[in-house]
Length: 64
Image (tube, rainbow, N blue to C red; front, side, top):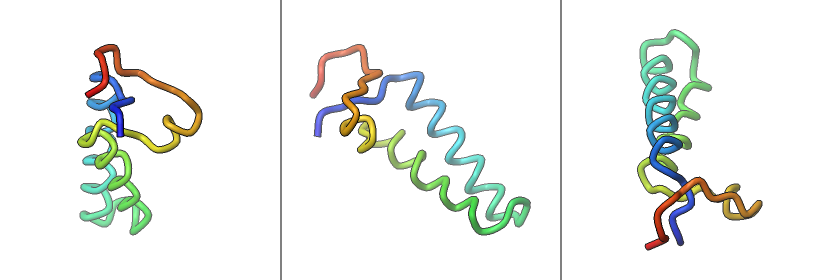
C-alpha cells in the first residue's frame, strides 16, 4: 500500500471521523454515525481504497 492521502486530506478525514463517532456515541445522529470509523481509519493509515482504484493521490511527498 502506497500512501495516497495528503496531510490536509488526512486531517479533515480524522476530524470528520471523530465528530461522527462522537455524535453517534452521544445519540445525536443515531447509529449511522459510526460510519465515521471509515474516514478516521483512512486518515490515520494514509491510504484510501477508492483513491487507489480511481488513481487519485493527494499526497505531495514521495510514497513510502
